[in-house]
Image (cartoon, rainbow, N blue to C red):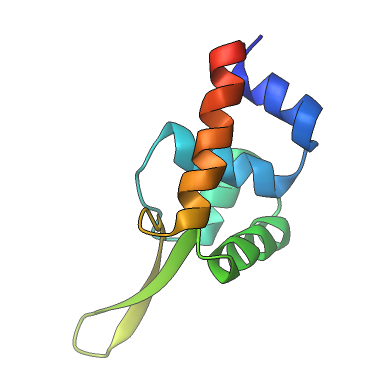
Length: 100
């Protein structure tokens, strides 16, 4: 059984879990919540809420990067590897994965 299937059985099929699994499987950043929502096949509102909650917990970072002369900003969503909650959640996912 794949990690995603097993994790959904244990933790529930939520957008929060899909976001966590996305960053667990690939440590890449996203330059928009819209793009992340599109990749996950979820609504923008659901992904925005999940990202916001995971940022509040310190697992993700949502950073505004200014580009161009007009100070137009781009929001970058990335994993906060220095947060102990990130380590704890990823250790749980590793444990689930090792049993699969």
